[in-house]
Image (tube, rainbow, N blue to C red):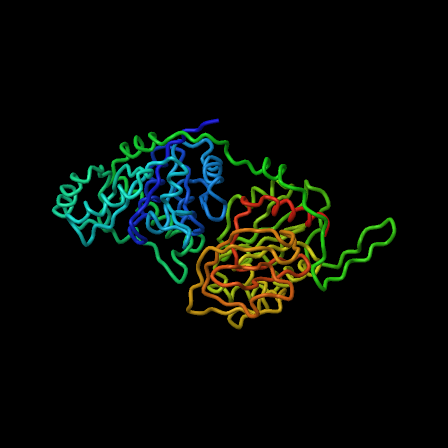
Length: 488
């Protein structure tokens, strides 16, 4: 099977060059022309895909060769691009920057090669003129397998500045597909972990995306960029399919109680008694009504679309809820997923929603599966910056100045609702908080880099950790989680 979805990779020599502005603006400008646009982001970033979704009207998806493996990049791309006229892939950092110590792995250049896609280099030209030719020549010639198809010049000061840049680039032999001037309204606010997510500034984000689209429309050769995208090479692989990978994943082993957890007593011919819970409805027992609640709203915005798709394929009904506003979990919740986000920004509001905090604690007390990553970990703690949280974990969390950032190789050290001990996965950490203690009596992961350590908590059905993981790399995780929802 081959596929030739037109596609472009938007790269840059370094972070801060304007990749997000150009990529998001292109998505919105193409969509305004009536094209079905598939938005993608290289790497583990969760925030940019929110702006991409706003621009394109489709779910923003990540392409991460470290978390998922190089072999899944093209299949996941084709899954997201089904039925689309064109795809725009925003790169990460500088074009050749990837996982530390791993060569080109997970870099924009690596993903561009895996996708056989032409690259458009976004260059911040604010402090240079003729030197731009040497810069572009270097990036275009560094790796002959990467096809730099053109350049978009950003932050150009004047018509005279533009003329000097174009004159210099004629010698580099790389076409100029656009020239963008500095425009204040396309700037998006940042804080301690990057851009402020769309969910926190919906109206302003809509205006910012509209401004990006207008700037790109006015300054770029859209027809030329579409033509370049149509020159992408054919991909000879099948699109990733959640139902297929779940069906072919190994059946989950029988539940194993966590260390120190008492096994429920089961009367002959009967079923194990269930503790009372604070849920609004009965716990479902059939796949057709098995609810997995997924935290969302402005606080918990970090998630991969494939996680919900895998849970659905495994037989769950995925129901989102907002921990800022909803005072109870969705009716019949049998399992809970709390992803990443910014609970430190909303600690007081989360704490004030005491009914939901109690409902989460009650669900965890039943032994129901709860998967919490990063922000979810903080929410399950006893307190965050002195504000009471759910109290599921006997741990406290606080903000700090140091940024913890990077890819991680991890191995499950305890049987849990997600994995059996010994399961290897790759993850990513990105936070300015610390949890004490860092691991429970039964830890979630053993992490090798940057130092060997135990990390996270496993107790009853709870798996809570700082690591963000991509379940597409080990789809048995979703299948095991849903099976635990049925049997807990």
